[in-house]
Length: 115
Image (cartoon, rainbow, N blue to C red; front, side, top):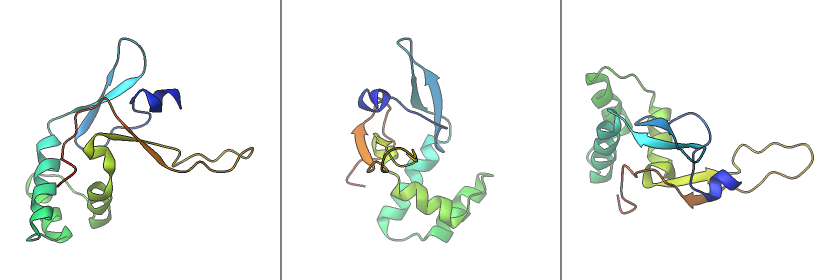
């Protein structure tokens, strides 16, 4: 919970991000060379002119293979807006599952909340 409150990342990086260690401990997400593709996908989808199949074709043109489901997961993921999730995968046998919470992360967002 402490890392979550500090806006640090806990897990594998998402498409469009890499992980960078922080001098004070923990890791942060940093945009990588795929970040521009993520931003472009959100722009295209927000325009209403492109479907998930169209976005899959767009990524295929760049040599990246993703399923429609993984693209939909990306479009619904608030991490791309700069937020960090906590509690989603909590499965302790000793206490009830935590509700999913979102906190402002320390990483650079790839899309705006309006998009």
